[in-house]
Amino acid sequence: MVHLRVKEIAKQRGISMGKLSRTADVSYKTVKRIYDDPHYSVTTNTLEKLARALGVPTATLIEDVPDSPEGGQRGWLSV
Image 1 (tube, one colour):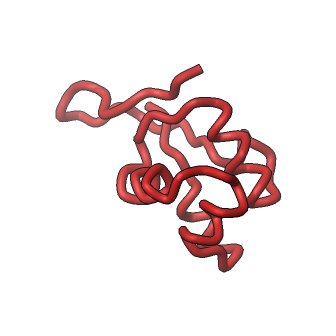
Image 2 (cartoon, helix red, strand yellow):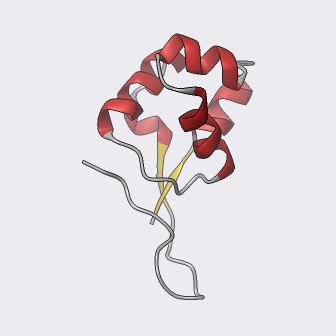
């Protein structure tokens, strides 16, 4: 399962959701969804915009984690 580290990286850099949304040119609603659900499905284009705004390589925003034992995946990454 893929876990997005957007919230974690933004907090480390002192970047608010609003500022990230504006800088990345990604809707605030999308940024909030990613913050609320790190398994939220995003396009690679959105991921690239967020990475650029945060000043990190795109791969830094993605973390592979084992599937939950409850069964099933909660989300997927659009490619």
